[in-house]
Image (cartoon, rainbow, N blue to C red; front, top):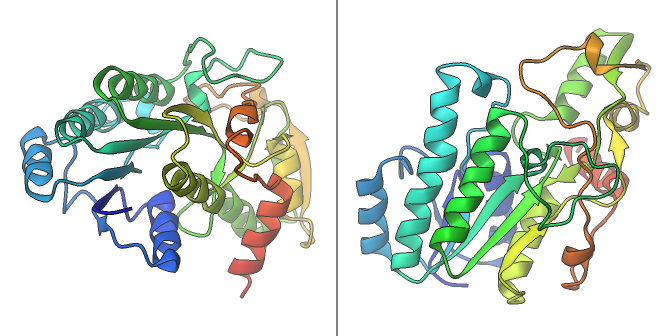
Length: 282
C-alpha cells in the first residue's frame, strides 16, 4: 500500500489505525482538521492534486450522537459527515484512489428481530444515522473503488468510549445502572482497523461490509463483563429510565457473514474486550 491518507488520524479509530500501520512498517500521511479540513472543498482538492493519495482511510466523523440532535451540533454533523465525505469522495475519484469509509449500525431503525444484511433498507432514526447514511450515498454515487464498513458500539484503547466510562464510574460508585433493552455487537477498534487494512491488502471485492466483533449483547451485559473484576454492582434498567436526546436502535445486530466470507477472522467481543483490558492494565 502506497501513498496512504488517513483523515481523523487523532481520533479513536484513526489512532488505532496509525499504530497498526506503524507495526506493519507502512507509511502514511496522518491528517486531522488542522492539516486537512474535509469540509473545505478547495483545501481537499488542492491536497489531492498535490499529494495524489492512492488509498484514503476516512476515519474523520462527527460522532456526538446526542449533540447532533440540536443546533449547532446538527449543522456540524451535516457538514462533516455529508459534505466532508462528498468532498473526499469527489477528490479521491479524480485521482483514482480507493476510499475506505466508516459507517454505523445507526443507518438502520433497530426494528429488525434478525440480523441486518449489508443491502437491507436503511431507515435511520437519529441525526447521526441520517448523516452517515447520506455519507454512504455520497461514496456509492461518486466512487468506483470503495469500501463502506459499517460498525457498532465502538470501544478501544484510545479516546473516550463506553469501556472507560464504566471503569471510571466504578471508581466512585458501588452500584451503577445500565440499559438492557438495546441489543447490538460491540466492536474493538483494533479489530476494525485490522479489517480495514485486510480488505485492501487482500483486494476483497469493493462494496459494503458489516464489521463488529462476534456475538451480541445488550449494554447491561457489556458493562457487566467490563466490570467483572471490580466490586461495583451493575443493575439493568429500561431505556425509558435513561432518556437521551437521540433515539438508539433497540436491535441493531448486523450480520457478519459477508465479512467472514472474505477469510477475515473475527474474535468475539468478549475476547476482544479481554485483550483490550490487558493492554490498558499494563
